[in-house]
Image (cartoon, rainbow, N blue to C red):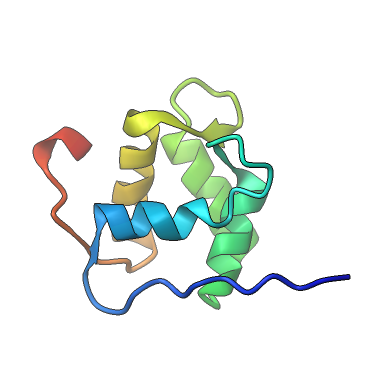
Length: 99
């Protein structure tokens, strides 16, 4: 089994573009959507406790159309806000269009 090495989330404040690029590397199937399992892998890479639970909560919070994944600008923006509030990720340049 091959192990994939992921880029770490930049330290300090993260721009929306940096967060999106970091999260995109966990899109295992390349469909442009982040599933709960993909988000869980991303959170595990940050060494967060209870990554499975936080991934489930993040997808539930952001998945407006209830298709089981985070996709589209509105859902990704909601995931950014969730990460900022609940995962201690500091996101810079979060304009009004992201809330």
